[in-house]
Length: 230
Ligand SMILES: C[S@@+](CC[C@H](N)C(=O)[O-])C[C@H]1O[C@@H](n2cnc3c(N)ncnc32)[C@H](O)[C@@H]1O
Image (cartoon, rainbow, N blue to C red; front, top):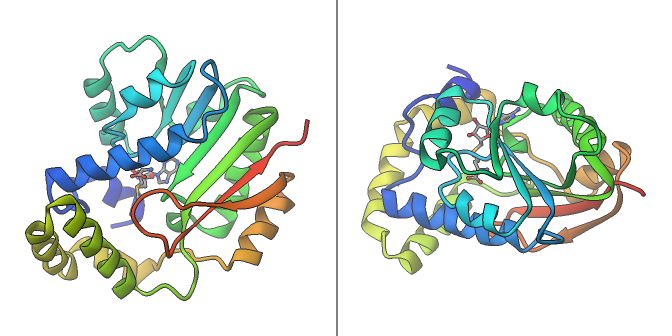
């Protein structure tokens, strides 16, 4: 099984429906905070099930939800129906869009599942598809020194605040025996030092690269913003 197969499968990365709902609510709130104008065209690349996408769509002009996993795209289409200003697209369909389509591109919890060369290729696509002056946000980047134990303790803290601690404890035990753990051990996750990821983003032609508050519940991971030069 590859990461791609894993995301296309019925995985149990969320420990309960409440965990999943609270996760996507937080990610939507964090993403909305970066929308530059009510008519902005926004791409959420690697959006997952995006349970709160309708709220994001209300806060922008048009929302593109890009997902590599066909089963997740089906779920998104079923959830969103024919919402006028939302398009569910594959990575190939993003490639086929006209250049300078987006005001904002966001990728949360995506790049750890990509190789470095896949990230560099995606950065080139994002630069091409952003309007001059458009913004890029890459969130939940894992630094090399954050261990799975830190991830687990952050999940437990989130679960305590969110009222799903019992499910989180059971979920952590399940994860220890899951495909996720096996894949994490087999392929690892791509991690980046701050100077390294800044260099990669700058090397792809972005300017004004800065650090921002991380998306979601784990402050040990990092969020970076950049701008396509006008
Ligand atoms: C950890 S999930 C993150 C989902 C969501 N962004 C969130 O914050 O919850 C990663 C998602 O990225 C998708 N993905 C992986 N590689 C991708 C790619 N090259 N293009 C688009 N989606 C991708 C996976 O199918 C999976 O749904």
